[in-house]
Image (cartoon, rainbow, N blue to C red; front, side, top):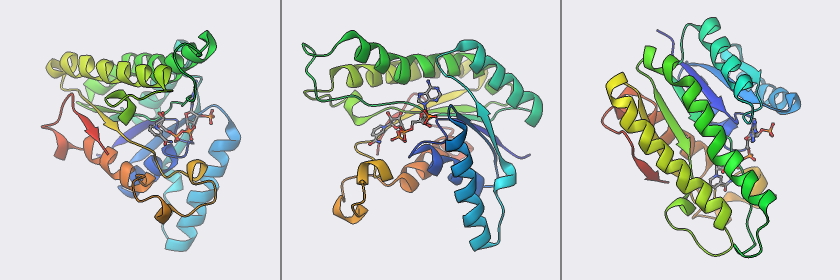
Length: 237
Ligand SMILES: NC(=O)c1ccc[n+]([C@@H]2O[C@H](COP(=O)([O-])OP(=O)(O)OC[C@H]3O[C@@H](n4cnc5c(N)ncnc54)[C@H](OP(=O)(O)O)[C@@H]3O)[C@@H](O)[C@H]2O)c1
């Protein structure tokens, strides 16, 4: 049976690599986006790759407009994915955001609320809304947290706390999912060598940054049955 993977933030720097990793495996991928232009350019890139390799994966890629801060929008996307593709085998929580450079004393409420909204609340709502569908397919959740969740430093208080809370959330879901056959794990990347972070520089200049393609391979593994012994893990990458 063809696996169906729901990827939040599928149009982001990491999300695009995650989408490709699952398409390469032959899965159907439903990628969420807020801005249609981001999804259109992802489709164009994958179409270009297909033209080069002679393989068209783009037919298995579907986009859905979702505001992850809106529960009804998330609920509709989950229901639509399950109805159209027959189920959901994995949920990859790749949406999120960063803010840094200010001490806790300097950080205002807007930044704190945004970090909690993007990194914790969106994952909480998505996982909750997808749980029943995942249980029907004995599926799994993989969340993209951050190394800052376990090694927080100065100037990233709101971000690190939101990602630490995400790891705690994943561990609760892992405990709750055991009886329903649903696993949940997190990855803890340091800096990712996305185009935005590289800003024109070469990845070889940053050997300590994880490449999106390598991180996506770990995420794909965690979502696979080969990783069935892993539940509640927070994997440094
Ligand atoms: N980049 C790094 O160095 C790094 C390091 C550690 C962890 N991480 C984590 O890795 C993940 C991916 O990072 P990235 O660099 O790929 O980020 P990115 O390029 O900024 O992409 C973020 C994605 O999340 C989506 N998104 C954010 N808020 C949303 C909302 N409310 N509703 C719907 N979609 C929303 C964005 O959609 P739109 O573009 O349409 O807004 C975008 O597709 C994030 O969780 C990030 O915290 C990143």
